[in-house]
Length: 90
Image (cartoon, rainbow, N blue to C red; front, side, top):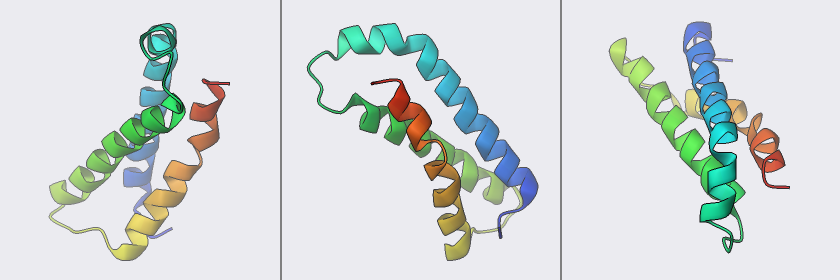
C-alpha cells in the first residue's frame, strides 16, 4: 500500500472505534428507524465518511496531499469493514 503504515493504523483504529460505538447504539438505531430500508448503508456511510475525514487530516498534519492511489487504498481499507456493519442489521 502507498499509505504510510501509521496513517493506515490510525484510520483502521478509528473505523473499529466507530463500529464499536455502533454496536453500543444498535438497540436505539433499530427502534428509532424501524421503517428504514437500508440503515446498514447509512451507518456504513457515516463511519466511512468520518474515517475519510481522519484520513485526510492525517495527511494535512504532515503538509502532504493524498494521491489518487492513496484514496484507492483507503477504499480498500474501508471495504474490509462493510460486512461487519451489515451483520448488525441482519
